[in-house]
Length: 319
Image (tube, rainbow, N blue to C red; front, side, top):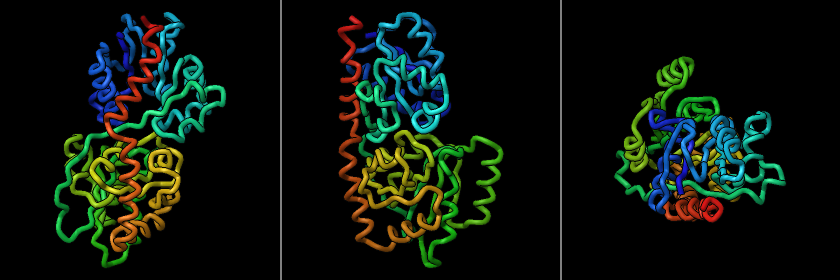
């Protein structure tokens, strides 16, 4: 089939949406489909549209549906879609109704949708290939945070947590991700001056992120809103356990019984978990055990299979 894959962010943004679009395009091309990745649909003929983000891609979604309402339209819901836009934004709500299939990126995503759309929804976990381990720096406990500095990520929670670590702690927190505003840049620079255990390296290449992950002992994801964070997939692929804010998008990725949650916005509890992961081998082993189980859901062959199945449901109609 000819597939128009719409993503609101292009390669230059290096964010989760772009990485998902690039990976999905590869999976679909390997299955024999002709895929064009675009930020906005150019109107050229396509048998099926697969759009990431209901609100940001709405212009393309609407144009495709108006051209021929019978052509398959698949809409993938991200964090801001699920946990904000579909509850308040008319464009996002209309996108839900226009879609023949909705895709969520973790198993709690369906809970946010109107009941009549549940049967129309499929879960596709994101994935990452295995990331071989590299030696961690000597006499440090390497903690990594990955993500742009923006409000939805609560980006300075791990930095604040370092102020509550025991004096003897060898933890060092490194944050990788660009600042999306001058205020975020100023806050990051201030945090580096005031909190010696935290450092910000700014926007780096994806390859650099993977090298840091390969050496990390732990990753923190402190978001207040996530649709299904790809950085969790990559941490698990590198055999790096995660401490995560207890919110639906993270629970959908890591499971209800995961021992590494802290309340959203609670740096003191995060600090307690950081100290436990550094100093309590049983706790760290328990984190690893849970992560290795969830890793099986997030392998590339699983993601590719679920995506191809979602598209295959419409191949006969398109033909």
